[in-house]
Image (tube, rainbow, N blue to C red; front, side, top):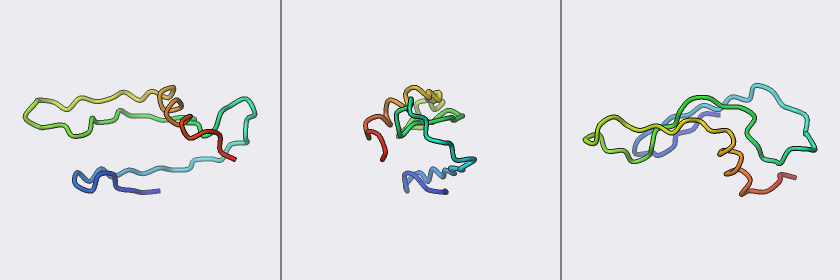
Amino acid sequence: IDYRYDLGDCWDHTITLERALERDGTRRYPSCVAGRGDAPVEDWIEETGEPPVLPFDQDDVDRRLARYGDAP
């Protein structure tokens, strides 16, 4: 899946389905099974120096996904 986030800044992303996993009855869904790379902070102003980044945190991603509840 290719998509563009923030049409003004044109952050282009690619999500690749590498494999489908069997449902695990001990996990909550949706969940993130892997990831990599840091995320730039939104709305950074160049005059303030180097852009800060947010390190990838899989546990934080799963906490945010938990807001959506278990998928059927």
